[in-house]
Amino acid sequence: MRLITHQIDIIRRAVAELAGDDAQVSLFGSRTDDSVRGGDNEH
Image (cartoon, rainbow, N blue to C red):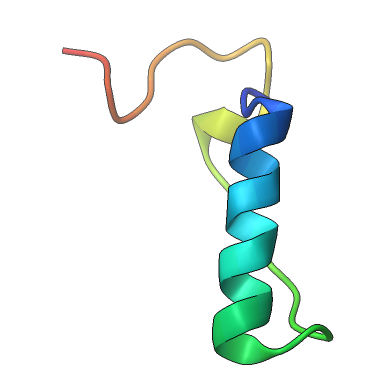
């Protein structure tokens, strides 16, 4: 996964704050596959 630990922690805290500790997050797209290039910041 192309997210660093700090980014994952921020996502987890925000989701827990907004939707509760039992909420689940699903990621999809190039950020979930280390072998894929591209993403939102690529131009």
